[in-house]
Length: 216
Image 1 (cartoon, rainbow, N blue to C red):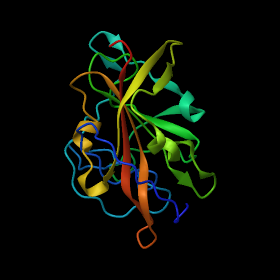
Image 2 (cartoon, helix red, strand yellow):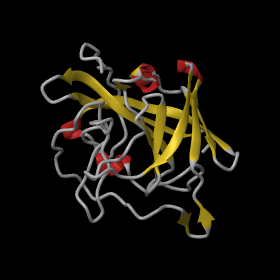
Image 3 (cartoon, helix red, strand yellow):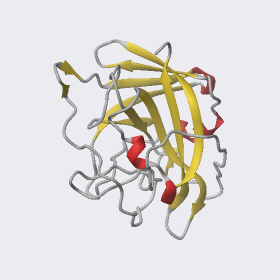
Image 4 (cartoon, one colour):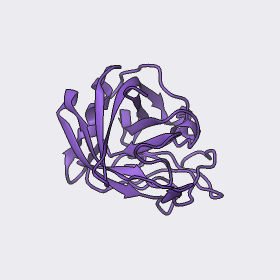
């Protein structure tokens, strides 16, 4: 955790409701029926506002097509190369994340790689006590037009072009849109950002990056 770190860059962004991030405060959370994921920083999470319902049925199959789990994320502009692990919800109804800041989590109840619609959500801690600052701490440096490469478990890959990068207060985070299963296919990257509040152990903002399929 790095209380002195600030992530304050703002660019227009997508439109889903994301609240407290789940890195122990980095991804938004929601009430059951179905509960909504949340993203957080690396400390004990505080209470999160009620969020819109997020689909939690296993996305193993969509119609006749099996969902392809993303397994690796590469952003050449940042020199970023991360493993991705499938994640569900934690006990508080927030999106669970790998403990290591160097590993990202894919929300397995949502769209996967090559999905015909909806947001494929990949989130990670901005930092952790064990690992220090993580790769996603640089998401705010991205510019529209940068390319993100994602490789799936079946050996296929997909390229996405960043369309929006923004920092938004967790209370105002558009989580419903972030975890949306409808609309045009897109990749959504999420982490914590902004000022670190030592009294709550959370960062005050979420960094949300939206990318669209190249040639899509």
